[in-house]
View 1 (tube, one colour):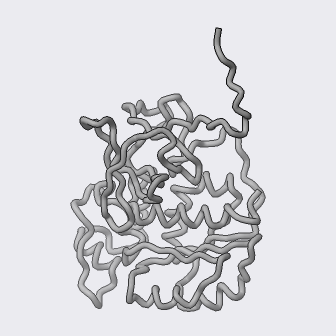
View 2 (view 1 turned 60 degrees about the vertical axis):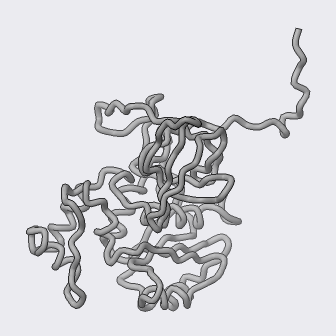
View 3 (view 1 turned 90 degrees about the vertical axis):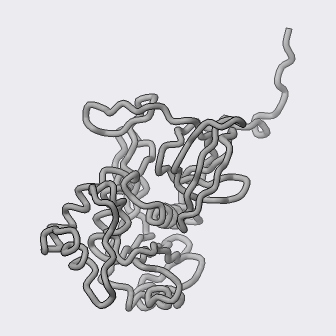
Length: 282
């Protein structure tokens, strides 16, 4: 004999999906709201823990508890990752065999590109747009989000006014070198409102958001002030003096989110959430 569960369905806890705590996965810890990328998952005397790195490079350790994290706004249970077997096509898959997109999201089999939303994501520069497309392209097409690139941020306030963000047409903007005291931060401060979000990364150029290990270099060179950063990098690394050819080398080294720094990962995920979550979302 057993006692039936008389709890109404709407009061029962919905089982959260188990997600491997793979390196680079960006999640939010439910209890503290701490957001970061997974850098380590290990066994301790108290059980398994995960170490997250935030956009400032700081680390915090959390236990792997059921429903303890949010992934793309949804509760998940992080579990210890298993050794991954590469698929025959070179695509990444979960231990259960489901394909992952380059951003680490679960791919939607047979999904067609959705009709574009009224909202947009603007990024500063063609290289930024190409990198976002390579890593998040599948996700953006499923969500119907169009990415456009800006020539620069000097005219950002006028561009935002012309776009006219509304609850049904939100605008997100990704800015290079968005650090306190920079020209970019002063311009971004002129733009505000619930329907527009300006975020950025601390790097001089989006090239630097690619992890050096992906390119087989120990670190990105330090370029003296007053010199063109890209030209100085090419010279220091002995690369082609054509920055276009050098960029193709950088972009070609990126195969997934694992090759990018957490500062860029977190910024782009925030923009996608901003554009797709709200009154205009289905």
